[in-house]
Structure formats: structure tokens, C-alpha cells
Length: 193
Image (cartoon, rainbow, N blue to C red; front, side):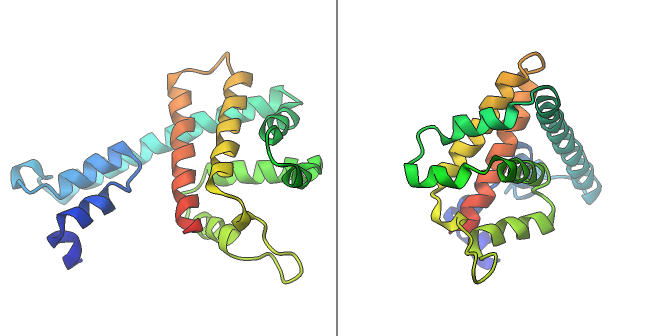
């Protein structure tokens, strides 16, 4: 705690890890050196936090509705997603994605995890995926994948959704997907370190 307040470089490094612009603004206002720039009381802080929570939930709802439209209206969504994702992967890794029934289940599980990353139990699950093993005889393959593959996975997902949900795609829906992508990558990077 002392290091955080006495070492400005350290403090800025920690603060800049906050991915949400609205949350970053709130934290900077809380920590402002000028007392007149801070919140007047705890009630103002709580109101701002509640507002932030509502905006995040609305954003997640937009992305989830977009994904559900793709799954409901495009029977080939998962096949096309995996075709696009696998393209360009090294041959030995392509085999991992051949069981499409398994991949359907895994994609849905990953997506619904993505939509609720803030839940502590999901953050714990995500960390265990990258650091643990499923069992002694079935080691977890995820730690072997570089971060670029997760970026590719998420970029391919967003690209497929934007293509298949193009009638409803707009700046707000795109922003909600980008926010989900950044939050997921932030947690994945932390888990892989």
C-alpha cells in the first residue's frame, strides 16, 4: 500500500492495467491529488459504480444477443467459425479441432464464460484452465498455446459474429464485443504469467 502511494511510476503502472475507461476515470478521480477534483462523499462513488455496473451489463447483453442471433439463425455458424479459426494454424494443432461436436460444446462454454468473466468463480475457472491439468492422464493443453492464439480465437469470433449479424451490427454492438475481447485477453495474460 505504501509503495502504491509513494511511488508514482508503480502507481501509474497498476492503475493503467484497468481496461475499462469508465472505471479508470473513476479510480483517477478517487486518487486525484487535488481534493476539489475528488468525489465529495461515498454516495457519489457508489452512484458512479452502480451506473458503471449497469452500462457493463447492458454492453454484455448486446454482445450476447448478437451471439444468440448468430447461433439461432445460422446453422453453420460454428463450422464456419472453426474453418476460419483453423485456417493458418500449424498442421499438428489442426487435429485438436477436428471433433466438431466437442468443439460446438467447447465454443458455447467459452462464449458463456466470456459473457460472465467478472464472476469470481469464472475467473478462478479461467485461471485453472491455463495453469492446471484436467487429470493425471489428461493434461490440460491450454498452457501450450501462445497468447496470439487466444487473440486469433477472439478476433475470429468477433469477425464471424459481425459478418453473420450484419443486419444488427453497429458501433454499439461492436464496442461491446471489443470490450469483452479486451477483458478476456487481460485475464488470459494474467493467467499465463
